[in-house]
Image (cartoon, rainbow, N blue to C red; front, side):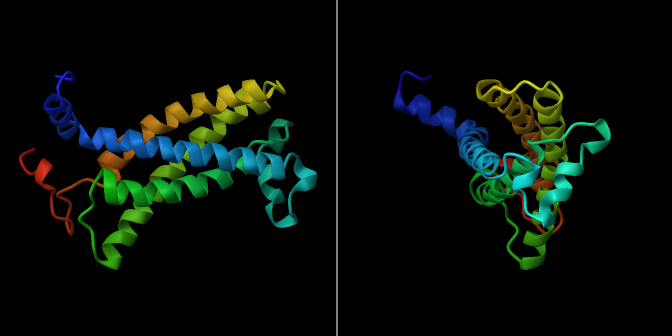
Length: 180
């Protein structure tokens, strides 16, 4: 099937949604990593954080551990989720919502589902980086990769089943889902 251009084209058309999700998922992951490390560099500890953001460092204080990863995770989440919403809506799931109300409902569902996986990301990074006390850039990078793999899978499932489900009231089903 992959030996001919027709075979590759047919395979891509059969799995277009997944292929586009992976493609834009890579872009989202790149944005997530770049912004995570940018904010990790800008805010390496609680003393470097503006007062209005210092509450984030206190999220884990009842464990007796200061989380240096929480603020960068939350800020990178905002940038990567915004990119993901636009690309998932337009290119991956080909949303049929066009009115401001329909798009707002999609956005609320999208950000709500991503908020759930933000919590998963925060817990994974807290357990693997903050709780272990291992201060190694390579170890932290590996922890971030592991967290992103879990989050990527959960995000696809939540987007497919909860956010961009076709045939929903107010959104016409796409041609690829009409027969299902």
